Image 1 (cartoon, rainbow, N blue to C red):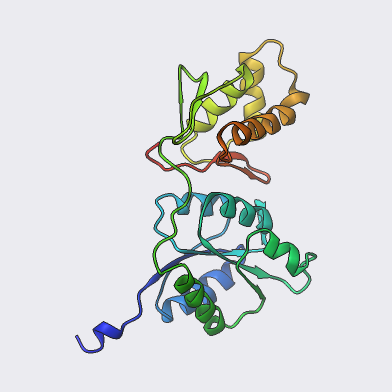
Image 2 (cartoon, rainbow, N blue to C red):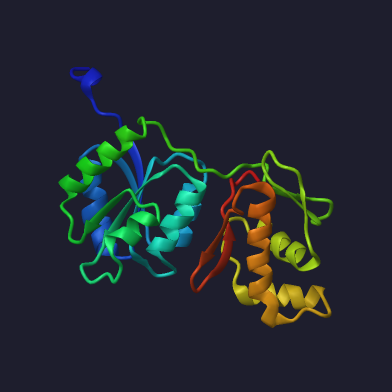
Length: 238
């Protein structure tokens, strides 16, 4: 086929933007016309589900999603992946660029953005990463064992769990990549533990994250989805 050897490699990118018109009628067709394998989602929860499987190299995320702040999404992705991250911001976005880049964002664009400029910048970002899909740092060996009393991180010793932590993680592992509402987790805790104080829920979650990081050197792949709850971002084979 003529010119086959010179054809640019298709780069896989997922666009998380709540403005459906912008996402579906401008960004996705524009990126596709520049040779990208682009798909779109409208929420953070859908973005996390799309990233399971490690096929994407880049993420374009809106600064404001209906279920999560874009900077919180960027921080989570940077902790758990080597994905290239670009952010789309409104001119009125009340954060300075230093805060955006400190969150782990590689590229920042003010809307409206020209698709050709976005495509060229994303192509350059993919080349900096070597052109290979960036592996999301989540491992199928994150699991529970000992009837849920131990958390087994990838390549680390198992971590003993308290009774509240066991209840929470059993529900999250069973949720199949879907967010679990805070209220549902509290209901589980109160049903399982006679003396559980619902006002201590946030302390339990904070302690769980801190202990996992301190004991294993790895952050628990737990995303907080505003208005939806909590979701473990794990490979679907887990």
